[in-house]
Length: 75
Image (cartoon, rainbow, N blue to C red):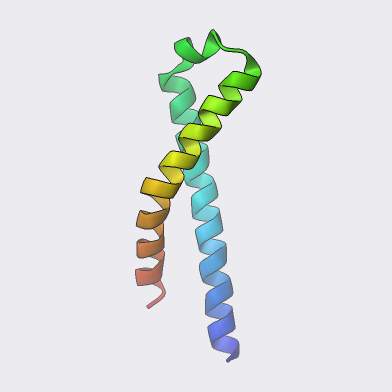
């Protein structure tokens, strides 16, 4: 029982850290690629666009891939 809790806790921690690092890389990339277009926007609109793009990419691309990789790693 304790071993399964430990594995679950470790998997959650690994998923959280990996998602955070990937989200940082995605935001940095988006800012670099679209810096010219984003600089013309107000800070509020810029945050709205970046966070929207981040959520779409994380939910539909990154997290499905990441969850498969981490679940294979813990088997």
